[in-house]
Length: 289
Ligand SMILES: Cc1cc2nc3c(=O)[nH]c(=O)nc-3n(C[C@H](O)[C@H](O)[C@H](O)COP(=O)(O)O)c2cc1C
Image (tube, rainbow, N blue to C red; front, top):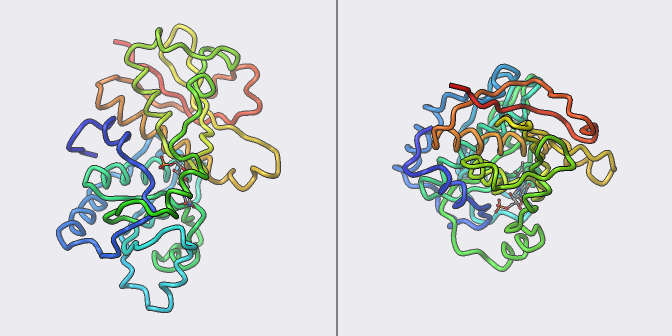
């Protein structure tokens, strides 16, 4: 994916936008979005463990007037006319792969000056599934509206304040050195500080930030996990956590490429003691020269 500026700037710029101008995308912009989707290689560090994904730009005018009311965005999204909708074949890492891919698209749309908002829950899944012809071998994990965002309404400000959308967990709750009892210190990390900061800036469902990263001692290898609470109150989020980790793997990967930090993604559980309450996902290993 080519961006017009450093990806770290785009990651910091991206925010969930829930209020849109009410106007469809202009022809030129529509074309740019379509080209962006057509030219995407649809690859991610999870590709070897995931089925095929596909994404489409869907416009409100394609829906009949009765259906408009059934978009199911429950008053949370206002004025959106266009949506990016995607599906992925059911597979081991389907949601992680989808999370990575939709985030690359969202960052590219942010780079074009467009507003977006990850929607994993508050939309009418059956309607959008029908529009993209989602087959029984595929799932539709999330969509995003895309358009010109307008000044945040009181409604949107309330949603953001309720979700504490501008806050993130402190560094020591997310990043660890060797094991979960040792928080990582920025001083030792050098360029990797920037990479971890891009993880911390990531969006997540309900802003729950379920990512936990453990660095190998004395090596720049980073093991990516999600929390895995068994408590019934959080079960609802278990289908979003794989998307959330896909998103931050995307931030780490794109930032590493931008900063020319070389490494490889591998799925190889390092079996770190006392991680039984987490779910291991993937590891980034520094490439040694
Ligand atoms: C996988 C995923 C699913 C989400 N689903 C919804 C949703 O259904 N409705 C909604 O209003 N926001 C949704 N969000 C947006 C989050 O609430 C938002 O990313 C978080 O509060 C942080 O705010 P920010 O995106 O402005 O940084 C979702 C985000 C992610 C990553």
